[in-house]
Image 1 (cartoon, one colour):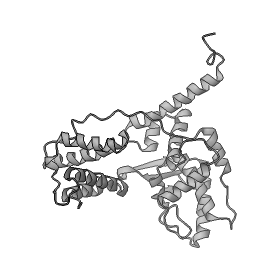
Image 2 (cartoon, rainbow, N blue to C red):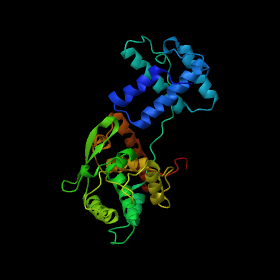
Image 3 (cartoon, one colour):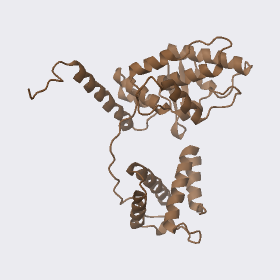
Image 4 (cartoon, rainbow, N blue to C red):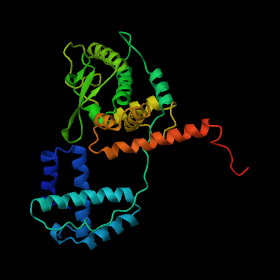
Length: 311
C-alpha cells in the first residue's frame, strides 16, 4: 500500500522539526503504514482516511495484533506511534479527536535493566589491551576504548558512533555528546579514560597515516565511521566469559554505568544529567537495582537474614 501523503508529512515533521533520528522516524513510518493497511484491509483501492477511524477500529486492531502473538509492550509502542500521529493532526487542526485516547494501556510487567556487576566490569577492563605497541593492531585498541568509554560515560551506542573528534577534549577531561532530539550534554571523564583516548589517537594517526584527525572520533582502519552492529559485536566479545548478564550489549554497559554510579553514592539528579534522561523517573529505575543488590548482600552477609524462623 502506498503511504498516504499525510503520514509522509507527519514523518517529515518528526525528522525536521522535532529532530527525531532516522531510526525513530523509520519505525514510526512502518507502524503507521501497517496501521493504515489494517484499516483499509491492505486494499490499494481503499483510501486511508484517518478522520474516519474510531476507537472501536483501534480496539479491533489491538485484538488483531494480540492474536498474532505480539507482546503487550510492542502493542503499546505501536499505539504510541498512532497516538502521536493523531496529536499531530489535532495540532494542525485537521482532526478534533484522537481514537487512541480512550484506550486503556495494558499493564506491563516492570523489567529492571540488565547490567554487569562492578566486579565483573573490573575483570573486563583488566582484560582489555593497554598502550599499544607501534605496530600492534589498531582495531584492538579502538575496540578496547569503545568498551571503556561506554562504561565510563554511560553513552548510547548511537551517541558513540556519532561522536566527533573535536568533541573529545582531553585537556578539560570532558566530551560533548549529541543525544536524543539533538540535545547536547557534557560528560566528564577520569584519568584512565584520558590516557586511553590519547593512546587511541596516536594509534589512529599511525593507522591512517595522517596528522590531521578525522571528523569522527571512532573510525575503521580506512577512516570510515563505525556502524551499529560493529559496536554490538565489539561489546559482546569483550563481555563474553566475564559476565552472566542476560544481554551483552552497549546498552548493558549504559545500565552498568548508572547502576555503579548510584551504588557508589552519586546523586540521582547528577546521574540523570549524565545519562541525558528527559525524566527523573527514567533514572529512578536504577534505584530498584541498587536496592536489589543491597538486599542480596544483606541476605548473604547478615547472620540472622538467612535464619529459618520456623525452627
